[in-house]
Length: 437
Image 1: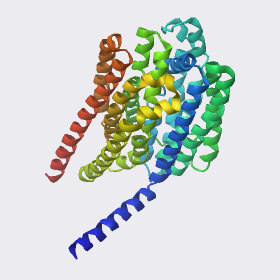
Image 2: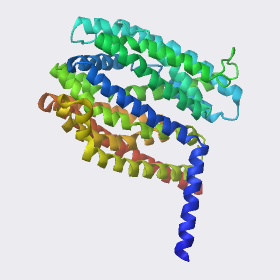
Image 3: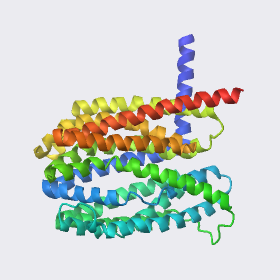
Image 4: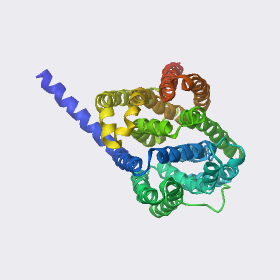
């Protein structure tokens, strides 16, 4: 009788959890993220087969250089829009005022990235003048990308998860709709320039789907000077943290290109990283749905600790199974999909999949810290991670090549995850004690 009662209670709790996830829009985001990654993986497989190994490596090198050059981006203003929209969830006018003001600031800042890309051939250590010119030709792309980031941040902040998911899925589909034929016809040159058509199409689709809840205000007088200053401090702290954090995923390819100067090595490393990168949709989908809700839990440490504990437990359990499956079948799948020419990617893949496990813990913890405005902690951790990344890559790549790059990436993910997890547990314990007193 007792066993029957406990099983009934467990079933009720499970149904309640499923319903709650449905109510917050998790399924829209998660399922669309799954589809996006499936489409992305399929596209990457076809792209690697359409291009020669050298051209695939060249395209990866140019994209990596472009990503390094636009690290400044909008300096965290679009992420701050999610935070402010979440904090003023009951005040639509103020939400719109924040979106308008932060969008203007973000677009002003993004012009700096445009200028950096345009003048990059004069200072960036490109392998050749031709590669520098191809990269510089993308100087208008940051403008379109930033508009699309703000469209998505508006949907996230206003909990329009179905719209967010729809735009993301369209982005992935249209990406390969343009990229694959352009690559087939014009190799890596076509792949580069297809990005303009992709981002413009996403912008039009995003604006159309955001009608009714994306509003620009003629005046932002609702926001006081002190509120704007606070928001910009939050944005700049977040932006600086994001710059360092994003650079962690670019340093390995940069050093591989700089030290080894072999495009086939870069191509194999990119293939090894494709599956771990594709799996990143799991913590990303969780962050997308839960960050606005975590922001609404400020001042409720016990409730937030309970939510964080459940999320971390679920993420670790899910990704442990994913990693075991990747270890068992990953290399065979890579060879089957990408061809025998990428068999040398297996060793890097094993190391990167371990790093992926810890990066999931880091990603969720990062989102929780940001939602509680603990951007200083995030900034400190990613700054230390950046120093560790550069040091390890400089030490390991000249000796071990791409395996050294993979080992550096995994070690940094472990370091950051451990520090953030430890800090959050200590933070919640102290906050709960304060609440009792």
